Amino acid sequence: MAVLKINEIRDMDDRMIKERIYQLRAELVKENSTSRRGGKNINTGRIKELRKAIARLLTVLRERGVS
Image (cartoon, rainbow, N blue to C red; front, side):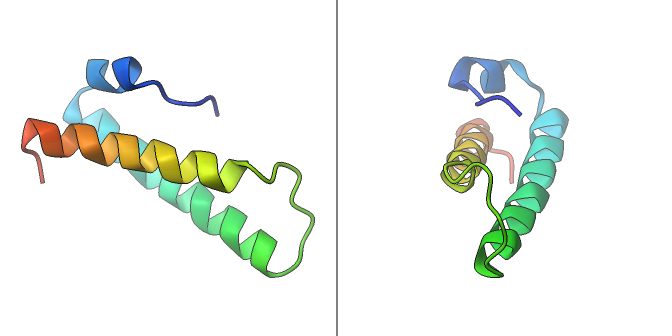
């Protein structure tokens, strides 16, 4: 998945943002479990990228007043 830009996120509706958060959190859990088990992590910066993308999505939702 590509890095989410803030302008792209603001163009999404609330339902799409919530779905994207769900997908990214699932991917983050998978990446974390792989790296903590000592597995081969192909892209080490992916965890940081996922966390930032989730934070951006949550920020836009909070700006809109959606809980």
